[in-house]
Length: 220
Image (cartoon, rainbow, N blue to C red; front, top):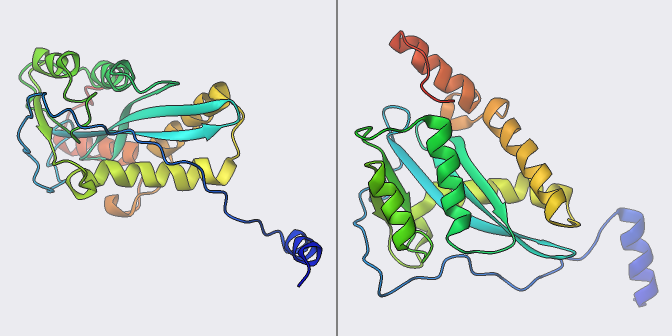
């Protein structure tokens, strides 16, 4: 079949070929850094809010270059409690997402929080681990190059890519991505129904839990 015929038929049917970009690495292990233990052991469950957080980074390709984002997910209610976007993968990126999560959830020492991530150099850096230690959170790290050890965070990245990045792309620049992520996170937390939460949103699931406890949420 002639190439022009293929082009015409694909256009009429609304089809396009898959464009494969160069894969980006967001997780670079740091062999010399002290490695915290794996306190989760692939058991991504929690009995209360802010008992366990999982964190990870991912990326988006835009017309003007790569954009990276870091998420912090609260395991009990599946709420995205912290996120940040940048044009680099330095420690500041996940650290800013962590700071947002700590501020929004008003985490204090003695909260019993476990923070779980992969063994990326950003997450085992001195600055990141010192910040966790400063608020009394227990750092937990999975093994190298094993997505199952951080499966819930990986799943969030997959949902983010499928529901936002692949559906609304291609993306022009950093500003467009940042605005879209803000809107998507708000929708994800407040409106998106989650099968693991009996088909209510993370925000509603958490409100119901606090109501059953006879108290009010501590988050901002």
